[in-house]
Structure formats: C-alpha cells, structure tokens
Length: 260
Image (spheres, rainbow, N blue to C red):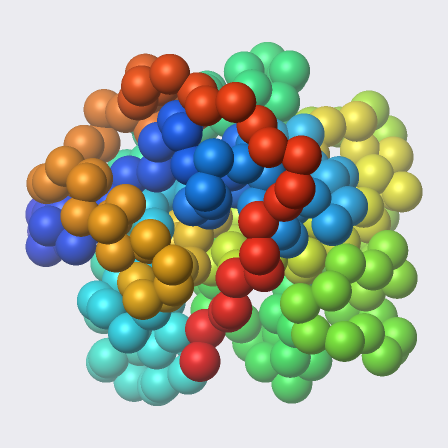
C-alpha cells in the first residue's frame, strides 16, 4: 500500500513554505512591501482566530494546477489528485495541527469542517469533503458538514456574514476549518462568522495553498528566496522569523489579483 509520505513526496520540490518576516502579511502570509498586512486583510473582516497555509500555490504552476483540477475533473485523474492532496493535508496535520491550535488559543479542535464552495452547484458534491471526511486520518472522525451556502447573492471574493449558515448549534466548540485555496480569505472568514454565530468559541483555518501570482510586483523574488525541498518539520506558525521586521508604513499594500 502506498504511504502518505510516498504520495506527498512528489510535491516536495514544488511546495513553498510560507514564513513570517519582512514583506509578509502577518495574517495570511501574502507578500507585501514592508506592510504589516496586505490589502485584503487590512480591508476585510478578521474573524478567524488563526490561519495557516501549508504552501504557497503559484498561479499556473504544479500545486495550483492540482488544486484547480481535482474538483473539476472526473475519474482516475480526480482520484489521483484527491489522494495526493489528502496526503499533503494528512502529513501537515500530523506535524502541525497543534501549532494551529496553540496560535488560536485552544487545546484541541473538537470538530473539523470544510469551507463550502462559492459555486452552489459544486458544493453538494465538493471533493474536499471526501478528502477531509474520508481520506485524511487525523480529521476523519471529527469531520461534520457544519456549513452550507445560503441563497443570498454575494459578490465573489467578498466577506459577508450571510454567505454561509451553520447546520447545527456549536456551543463553546473549537472548530478547525479546512479549505483548498486562499486568495483573499473572504470565504474562510465568512465561514468562520457563521460558525461563531452558531456558538463556536474558536475557529481556525488550514488551507492547502495560499494563491499568488509570480509576476505580481516582487513575488518572484520572494518565492525564489524560499529554500527547497519543502520542510515538513516547520510550518508558517512555528518556523523562526526570517530577519528583523521592518517599520510599518502608514499606507497599505495594493490589492493582489486572484487566479485567472
């Protein structure tokens, strides 16, 4: 039987671990130009108690292709991509879920759920729930479908407390949200708002890929500065800060475009 380590290994040379430091958003690990927060985090609602991406997902490159394709294709290709993403998530959770819990101020996450798709037609059969609820050992027994998309018409990539609703009451519960991709964070924060409205005390998020476009501003320079292969022993929350933080200017970063 193929192991989690064997399934995740082929991506070690394309995954890029986010790190805190100068020119990195303190909330979502987007690249900035010496600012504490990127444009999206400065202007959006900060509802999550903690968030970490496993890797940067660079537009049109291998991890981005896998994250975009696993939910749009069928058959053996979809199963193979889903298994690989499940292995990446499993391996990361085994090493670093406790880092996320510590950052969120909780001992452990009692429940795990996924951020619903912004596409209502896709949401009912979204393969991320199959990955989190069936394939990934650390989440399998804690997974519940705690969120659903409402009928409210919400513009894409915008935070809105009416975007999702909880399927049950969650009094004093710590919930771990899983999503495949983070672009602006609007959906994850909207999902966290719905969970907290239902009584959840703590909500933190792990995303497989933090989307970036390599050609945007100095992103290529920052990405080329990340050492490879991927270091499974360090996550964005527990890795040592790289260099001193720079003084924070009063203006904020420009908006970053999302995936094509």
